[in-house]
Amino acid sequence: MDVSTGKSRWVRTKVNLDDHIIVPRFDPARVESDPEKAVEDYVASLSTLPMDMRRPLWEFHLLDFPTSEATSTMVLRVHHSIGDGMSIMTLYIASSHSTADPTRMAAMPPPPRRTGEIYQLQPRPPLSSRKALLTWVLSYLVLAWHTLVDSVLLAATILFLSDPRTMFTRPDDGLKAHHRKRLVHRNLSLDDIKLIKTAVKCVGASVLRLLMTRTTIIFSNVVGPAEKITLCGHPVVSMGGSVYGQPQALTVHYQNYGNTVSVTLAVDDTQFPNCHELLDDLVESIKLIKNAAGLHTLSAVESS
Image 1 (cartoon, rainbow, N blue to C red):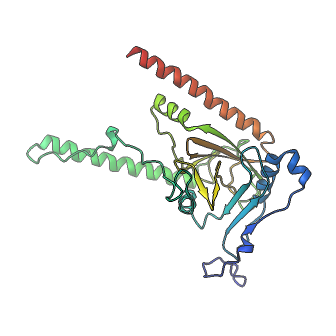
Image 2 (cartoon, rainbow, N blue to C red):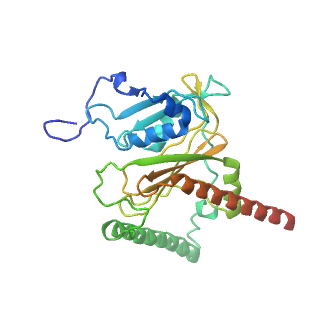
Image 3 (spheres, helix red, strand yellow):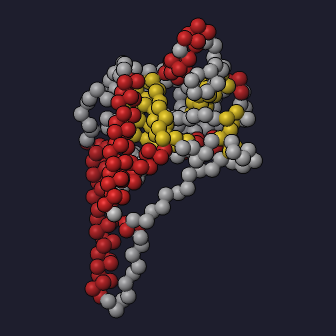
């Protein structure tokens, strides 16, 4: 940040690790009574603190006490100007190694197989078949028309439309207000998610790029490593990510890690005081869908 002009600009700088690696102190009695709550409260407090614009916008917070999941917790806080979720995840994986084979980098999930009819290129018919050629050209003209209409509707939505205010919408007091966001998470089985995907014939991890200032809830996901990883010699038991600073009071984030999927809710403390109950309801809903999908798959197998 240029102090004289108040404007931000990129400059070369010397990194002082003491400014970026933070080991906070905690009340031992508080940590011993509920270590998960101590981690949760600390992460929530970070969402109210602006980052120092005079130095590189990243921080490592090391919470050196055991929880029910791991012996310690690392919190990485990164400004979105440095990179999006996927680029940060790629950098994180590039800095780690496979737990099963420490000599190599962790493997990412294979790219999805797009076998549907929509993904198949239609070859141009021979010029001698005028009717087939006209149909082929017309299909691309229709595609161009729909693309134009969708672009106009998107622009109109951004400029003139917005969702009505609900309990999921943060109070309208400016985007620069630092509202306290509480992050709660739960790990689900990746196999259960794949079962649901197969039963309902949909994409398992859709990224919904919602309009940030005119929508109610944000859904997001990041593709993580397909196997367990080790960072600086320490095995990573679980990982999850989210964002804060948006006008929405609720953000739902999904991230795979090995054979699990981490569901993280970033909720406004004032509007969702019972955020754990909200997370429990979401997880219970996924279990109900999984059970129904299992019955559907079993019926299909028996019928065949």
